[in-house]
Length: 396
Ligand SMILES: [Zn+2]
Image 1 (cartoon, protein in one colour):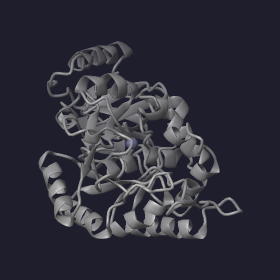
Image 2 (spheres, helix red, strand yellow):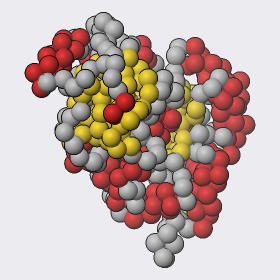
Image 3 (cartoon, helix red, strand yellow):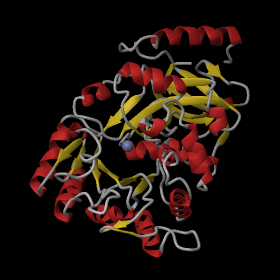
């Protein structure tokens, strides 16, 4: 069955009522089918297919011509893709802020990459079909005096001075509902480096997180933090390491040929081997004096090795913007990712680094977080999605 334009608009009007506030919505209406070219998030596009949605979940993806049992929408020249996930941002904790600043622009989920403990309650309050779902890690675990304490307010860090303190902190955060753990290996740029975790404490934190099924996201801006972070067993490197403060001596991260120096390349290879993902956050760093090849060459090398890259822009630092992260998408493209790779970074891989197990992919059983754009998905078409569907509810 194909609805007339009038019937379709009536459907949108009805469901839009559900999304008008940030109270818990009624169960989404359905079932329905959305047809066009389906971009699952990872894997090849499927032209002429339909996504079947029921009770806020994806039931399946089938050839469009086989759908007979439900309302059927086929926007002209439409592409259907998973909702975009900004895997690395901060602030905008409340459900209302996440709705207004992220969801209404097509960002259906976010990864809060460290915020003070009191923000956890607000971040974990995500009524279905109403706001951008948040993954949260709470404050960043750090050694006494280590990053983020020299830069950010004390509540942004949670110090662990021993293996026991590290493992206990992970357990406490898990009890409070975090979806991943954030730690830091950041010596900074001053001649006297900020303290880094000792290997045993960092390994205890990663081991405790692993046992609880939580990924460990690690802040690493400086190359000297990368090896110790990988030794500890982190699962995601946050920010692309772009400088090298070797115990007070500044060394280049790029060789004369423009590629990362050999020891950097071998750590990138190790990340690929061990399945460690990278969230480069190029948007924020291209707004610093480091803007240039030191940011792009490592991402390009990692991508060409087959490394998993997630999209995040580190909002709100350095005047990065909320909304659809098109600038980060364009910068990833400048680092060598084609449209398909950018889409995967912004959906499937972003979900993985945030610890979302039921988002970021169009597949049976996943939450029906979907976008419809006219033409192929890319920064230009994503800037103004035709439709935004959250947990099966038409938001736009
Ligand atoms: Zn950040």
